[in-house]
Length: 114
Image 1 (spheres, one colour):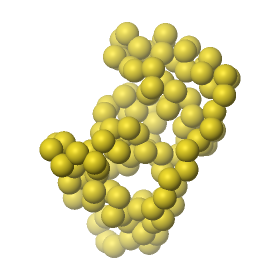
Image 2: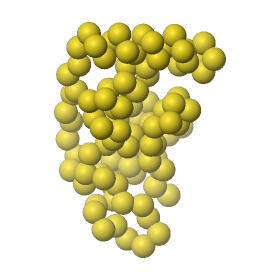
Image 3: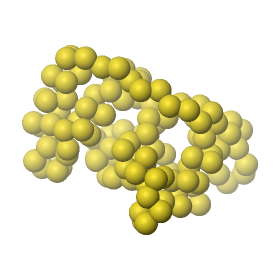
């Protein structure tokens, strides 16, 4: 939703982190979250894509996160990297995601528009 959205609908910030589950749902018409993903895309203030560049420090921290949470939470290494990127490089941006890993790790996951 654009800044200052309509009554009863949350406002989507100008910048969000998009998880692979979001991109997949946008692209796959058979995905159970396809309609929700497209609605979320329609609510975005400024559609665009910026790829976050990260280095060895992020990978090392992601390894620690993966070792701490991987087995108990069935966390993928890709999600561990995303967690570290969001919490360190992107200053805790809210996330568009359809898996529960981000919520379990304490990240802000935006509610899907109704």
